Length: 360
Length: 135
Image (cartoon, rainbow over all chains, first blue to last red; front, side, top):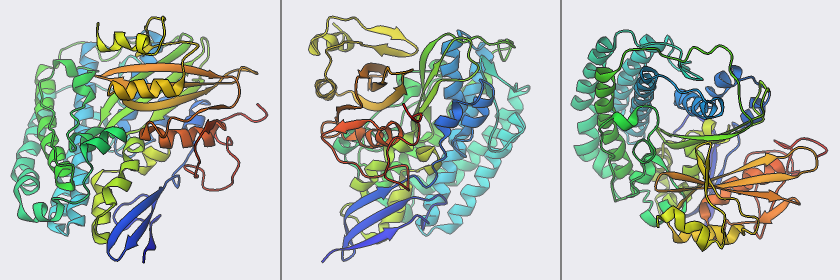
């Protein structure tokens, strides 16, 4: 006999609302149905009533974790419609902020994953580290969540002393290598709790169009920083960690290894940052009629913005956002089928979902 | 011939790719969306999304289908004369949620599939989200 267990919209593991109806036979999940939309704010529609400055502030609020990524993607699309090319220093600063945001996101996720594994000491350690990453972001931008760094044709704030930021990043890196990375890559607790559960096969990852670390944990080696470089990523040397198992442990490993790669990128960007202007300095911006599309590798995977504009208009005529969790979430159904009910909160959290992004 | 250059021929199109706004566009009036999905599947391209646009006046709607092929973003526009187009959900699982979202947002009917509410939690009337009223 099967029965339905509704999980959510107040989720046992995550702060944001969504609902999963689990069809179970005993303790085993037979099927699942996902319901989203609890955070729907109509942001795409709101964007059509905002001018080219206001729309950046609006889209920064699509997500509370990867806020910078949204403005970066939007600004890149708008630069395509204005013909403005950011100066090299601005492109490096965009890389620095994007990688700090990735660190912040991955460490936050690692903390939540640790809590769900019953490893609360690790949760505290991760959140302490996350605070330090946010301290660095605050020094650079003056803000801890919505950094307001991106503008059309560059960035709003300079990193005046990259080497002092580098010292902070190195201190962070050392602490992560001492605590987070060994725990998630070698500890028996993490291995026993995560190995073999929530498996997303390579075939399913491809057919569901899964992106980011979730795809890479199922053997799909896609990363836009490598495949379609933007900002200054073409000048950075880094590896794209890929695992084949597709289980929660693989997703854990990919993100842990990505933390190391992010530190590597940050070191290069801060060391090689070229001198010069941080934006084009244009105060009046003219758009051409048309649509421009931009894609960026966010902490959770590919973000895509399609922006349409009409010449002489101050507002976009359409802004469409495809967020990574929108692509990743349907795969949860395939991850939980056959799993034990008790494992489902961790499996759901293992994709690092963002419902604010998904619902917009 | 590169992978991307072989696509128009496979789709029976003589139109060239046009690179614009970060996308390689292929516009072909006789293009069938299901043939397109089959071709993209055969080429192991990754489905990215569908973007819907409401055109001015009585011009209807335009849907832009996007796939990623080795880091290149491909775009295929379809102008809808009515409110419907064939669904590709059965061929491309990744299109499920975006078809449901466009159905709710723009009242586009993707033929050959059923819908469950995705974004809007109340009310059954589709198209109340992004589509302008009385159009």
